[in-house]
Image (tube, rainbow, N blue to C red; front, side, top):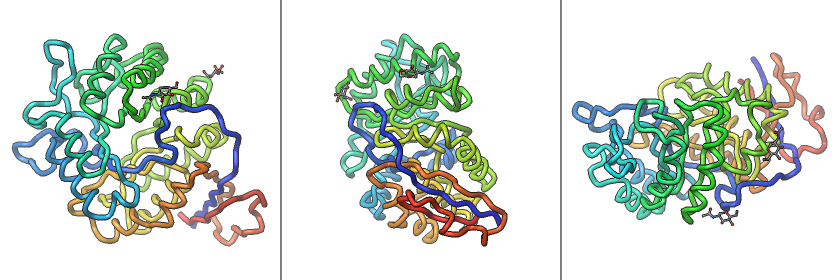
Length: 343
Ligand SMILES: *[C@@H]1O[C@H](CO)[C@@H](O)[C@H](O)[C@H]1NC(C)=O
Ligand SMILES: *[C@@H]1O[C@H](CO)[C@@H](O)[C@H](O)[C@H]1NC(C)=O
């Protein structure tokens, strides 16, 4: 058995994006890992990317105890758009799948005490081939999102160059600020640049983004969870100091409640994401989630640790094949909190 101990250590605070949002890691629900780019509402109306899916998830977040625990964002990912912009160049949702429009969906989500997140892509196209936000469209799209009442933007990075990303990600941060609406900003930028210095400047990221994807997309498997944890731990010297209130590393969604993890593996993902001060975005079907998966995701102790106001990301301090090798005496006295976890 392989055991890993994670530890929270204090670190110096750095400058951060000053929109006042996400002082603790954001929590909510994001469509992608579970529902992908399923746009087939004819044969799969229950699971396709449509306003109905997001309204139903909002209902469940509000009804089933999630919202009270902090799971407040309902987030759209790729494949919500029409294939083309309108005549004025505005992004528009697919008219058949979002007949009432995004503003109405935002109103619906807000009426349930929740927040709505949307997805865009800095580039010529989104990853799935929908209209992208090129450099000259950034202000226009920021304004569109603000006018719809959107509360968060995930800006992906397919189909753009390193130069365009270096210009575009800071530019969108300014444009969101200029709308006057507080909109949390998730940047996929580092994941497109290898996630490490010198290509990635984490000081800069913390100044412009509330969270950022550092590494590969999560898939529905334990191997995927492990590869993410391994990469984050191996590079924790760079990554751990970058996180703090208002600016977070994002190892991607929680896949608990899906098909790839056993019960013990599900508990492990929750514990590891908790200790990593990771955003807790579930990507599962809240309409049919099992009681055991729900219990893990609603674990109050995990959520309390994850939501610690100091926002200090945990570090791996020991890795061993032998779980008896872990002893509390080996933990530095400066530890504010530790948690041993056997994988
Ligand atoms: C815009 O940025 C300024 C600081 O640069 C901040 O005080 C203000 O709250 C921000 N506004 C929004 C809407 O994010
Ligand atoms: C990283 O960005 C910060 C803030 O913009 C800047 O002061 C610093 O010089 C940058 N570091 C490098 C190595 O480019």
